View 1 (tube, rainbow, N blue to C red):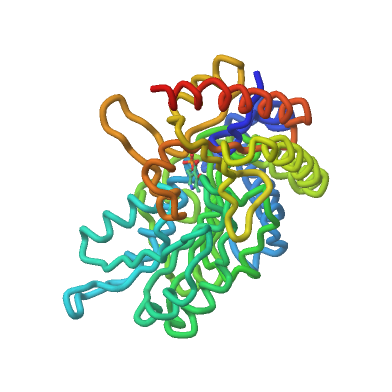
View 2: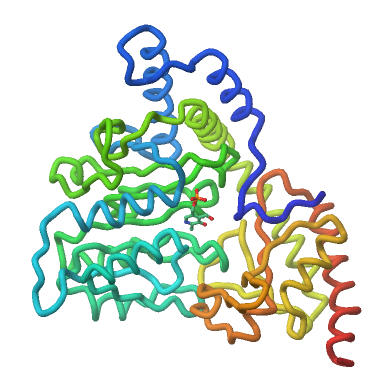
Length: 393
Ligand code: PLP
């Protein structure tokens, strides 16, 4: 199998598997218990928090805290809904407050925004045409903002958004606005620092970096905690400093921490490996000329790109690749009857037809030159056979 769908999920790294195995066998205590078994689990969590923080460039606890969640989606929801509901917000001019986000967020943020809209908040979506955050739009809508949530790397186009510039623009007009970035796809692909980004809140997910599924984390800056600008969305026993009740997934967190330690130790060589495979892919695609268009954003990240193959539905392409043992994903998800065209790629500037003929290739450090060559050969085959068939049809 040639796996080029690493933005969907990554294979767990051996370090994560070993750490999870050890935690399941040896550190199975409840971290909230006061006895020795509980203390061992609590110690594991403390070490894991430090490992996740370090992988995010957070060196000191005085800068901020890591809260473990059940996934990246939950970290996003805790950030967005937790920040908005932390204060009582009476209605003014028919709105409970203005929230800025982008028009190409992952559903984890977009669907939380829709709930907030239904609850009386005004949500302004910043255009991301060509894969760039429209900073003029941000400036024009920056007054009275209570929360700005902009993803760092788009999960479909691979665009790296100028989140720092956008947060600066928001703060110039609304100094009290809480800032959040969904860094789930940026994690492991670009060097992240919440302080450099100006992010009060930042979400990540373990399974995008060689950790297990079902574990995420939210970085919360110390200033945000001090000013009580985050409220829990899952009440209960008060775990994770009261922000996320529920007994922690200790083995999952152990695997997450191991993946973070691996990432911190190998970031530079991982990035070089990904860049080399990407370059080989783009070199291999180039001879196909206008039969294939790579949708390059303003500032791309090496690990994710999307390509449009005019005249071939992405579903047909996925099946074609799948028959050759190659896993990629669609820029659009096609349900049996309804046609759901990718919001992110429409926001990028593609037409519905183009978005419906778009696939995403996403890389991890283990991908090889041979993977790239196999993909390019299959793509050339697809163009030669399927495009001709479409034309005849
Ligand atoms: N945010 C982005 C940008 C993502 O790509 C994903 C997952 O694909 C998520 C959030 C959700 O993460 P999880 O699968 O851990 O819930």
